[in-house]
Length: 287
Image (cartoon, rainbow, N blue to C red; front, top):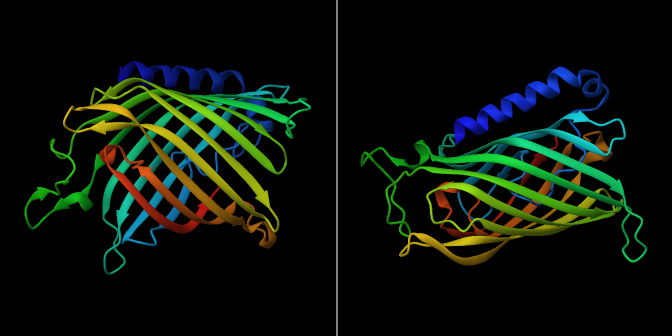
């Protein structure tokens, strides 16, 4: 399954590179037709977000890029690459990596004027993603003194374990210059461990406020793992709230300083069974 997925990615990327060079040169690849979701913690991005209530740090390195843009600028196709890491903060400016997730995939997006009179929006957009994700524990989860991996009180299986998912994600959005609302659906068509409910739902909103500030919220219904059954039963709500300021006023167009609060199922695959809540503050770069 992974070999087939990788081969498909390579073939499609080669097609875009061979047939759409002129269009790609005219289009700013650092901007995507479908703007990344501000508060979605699984959006490919570059971010440094130290936790405010524990000695931990979120470090994300990734981006989405459009490789093809139609002449009408209503359709684009591109790639997603990303990692999101959970680091521990220790003395002497050391940050051992506890857990890390890797994502790569393809995307397609659409954008059209919206002329509805009942809603205060002027643009409709959509994005479809085909993605693979895997997760791993690293040196920060290993107890060198005991020569063993750190065990989890709410996980009775082996540590570490194999975590891999392939999925299709669809997001629909309505927007105006000051506001965007969106809804999404995700379907897992292959997963390790097995027994995971394949359906997840998503919704969110982003509001521009005075002085280059903004607030955003992302909500998800994620499958809830039942350890005793070794399967998921039902769903649990997870939310991520973000408020921040874009540093456009001092010439840093692609930098935003944010405060972030998350509550729900961990975004890290190695902790897919684990609920958590934390606040963080830091910097996100829009590269």
